[in-house]
Image 1 (cartoon, one colour):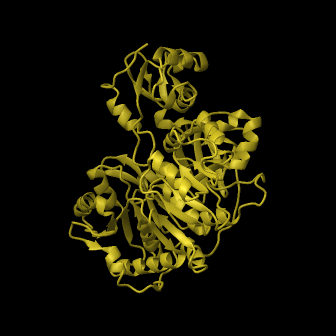
Image 2 (image 1 turned 90 degrees about the vertical axis):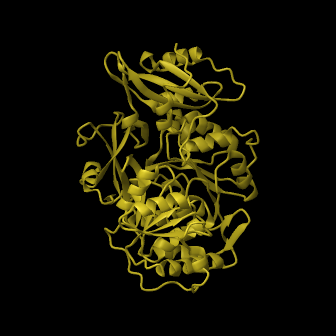
Image 3 (image 1 turned 30 degrees about the vertical axis):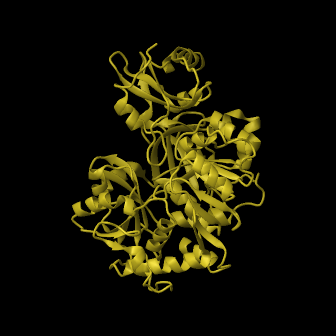
Length: 544
């Protein structure tokens, strides 16, 4: 089954579009982080100064620049400055250990690494291991011996750098880390087409919110919005949020670090109208005692994405905040795949409850197919297979990695590694990551961890849940669940196991249940299943 939508691209770059806004109403706010508040005019001048400062470090169009940054206003500006002067952004996320971080810098061929002073030692170690010997630049004063790029920028002209060629169609302008084995990271390389699609998604928003068309992750239709970047700016979710806000002319408010109480305060005090959360962040916000109906009257859009979401938690979000919830599905290899607009979800979800499990339909200029094990046969509606995608948001390939590019991309189609199905109307339902499927039982059947986790989150006292397959002598794998329980809740693992069996069948019955105060999360806020898997043998468990 295929779902298809088309848009056209604009000739200007997304940085040009941002600057068009920043040349208008120069005293209006553009970027905010706590007490730091930059007007459009100030942001524009600081961006130009940073562009000149980077050039003075010997950077030229096409050079790679690693960005190892915390959530700060200056992090937003330095990322824009790298693209402004025609260089390639290489996002360096905080998750990898020293060896993999060094391999990422090396494989990306970064000529320079811009680091937050907090990460300077790790950045220096990674840069020092690279045979390309990238320059180390600090975004502010640093104890190590490196150039403070903010101090250097203060001495540069506040005029736009000239002589920057337009990027070629097949040129990698942004590289995102997707993980991998130690010493061999996967770097998803994207062209300017990704940003053309983002601009179009903002500018082509329909006036009728119920109009049946493909949308983007978060459509911000006017410059009056105030958007909170709560996820990491060096992660695809934070990058999408910040860029869509800026190309729409909205004010971007940066949250330095997520903590539910602090996030709630910023959402309220800054009058945030739109934001994006990964599911564990959203759940933590909903569980905060001050998160009650009416607490955020200005909020009109909450996008949830980056990981599987619980239908019961999504419905709770609407109960607390109103019909503001949008779903988005993507990955580093294809930052936009499917989306579900808030108005559409609110109107159709009441009539078709199963849609709360869907992540929407194909976004603009994207095709989705469900394919079988061979990767070539297209499956009919309702049948589970691998989600395959083709469109403008799909990566060029893995940077400097033709072998794994050939495995992932076939005839322009990306094999996502996600398992799911399409219904007759083109709504996409994800059931698992291919690598997270638990194969168990006497006939080696599939247990889909997302199906199990969604059900567990409907049970009283369960705030978050994760399901893993663990080694089992009889069946190869057995189901083990981890439950984060609410304070004071009396969650009985036997009752949980019986409920799972009654609802999903014997195959899904957990062999072991681990009760925790909270589930570990990665730096980008997703449940860290690797950490759970590494610790499962020593964790206190209940065996039915």
